Amino acid sequence: EVQLLESGGGLVQPGRSLRLSCAASGLTFSSYAMGWVRQAPGKGLEWVSSISGSGANTYHADSVKGRFTISRDNSKNTLYLQMNSLRAEDTALYYCAKGTVPHNLGNAFDIWGQGTMVTVSS
Amino acid sequence: DIQMTQSPSSLSASVGDRVTITCQASQGISNYLNWYQRKPGKAPKLLIYDASNLGTGVPSRFSGSGSGTDFTFTISSLQPEDIATYYCQQYDTLLTFGGGTKVEIK
Image (cartoon, rainbow over the protein chains, first blue to last red):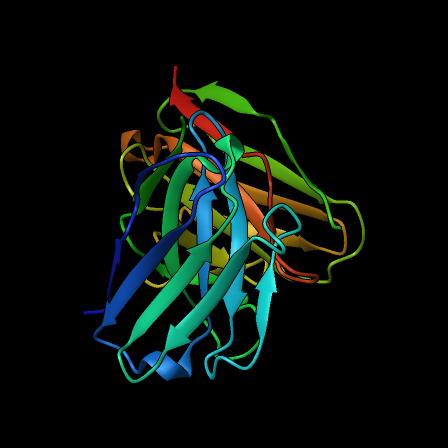
């Protein structure tokens, strides 16, 4: 069974940094693109970032470009999201999700973690 | 950026009703369109991929159609367990989700 387990969320002050991790099991990790999707309180789903299976290609939404960086360690079956210069509007439940293909953004996300909550507040 | 406009934003229907949700892209996206179901407290679930293909283990009462800019998601016979918010998502250029449609039982 494929499982994704996020960690690293919490309460952080505006302007500070946080790194999210997503540990994957039950799959050949490097064979799939992976992504992060968030949902702010009372809002809809918002795609944040994606990374190809090899890690060679990364993509970020305009709302986080220049502040967030997605990466992966295929030897550890782990996906990361480095979040810098955090803002109140980054407050959300962050999901890690598995793409259905290895390349580009992953097309669709067929497996999701349970999410980790990030709260940006002073 | 490609914008995805979903309608309605919410609907109320009776058990057994046919439910239809539409999603319109701001530019043509071929069939690069997926549909997800999100129940409260649960992670999203992929229901339909590439506009019309049923996801793994998804009941056949769910279906999708469309191409280009206009897409439709249908529940042929609404069941109590279908109470959720449904989202479309394009992957033609980066990824964008629609605003969501909250489905309730009348």
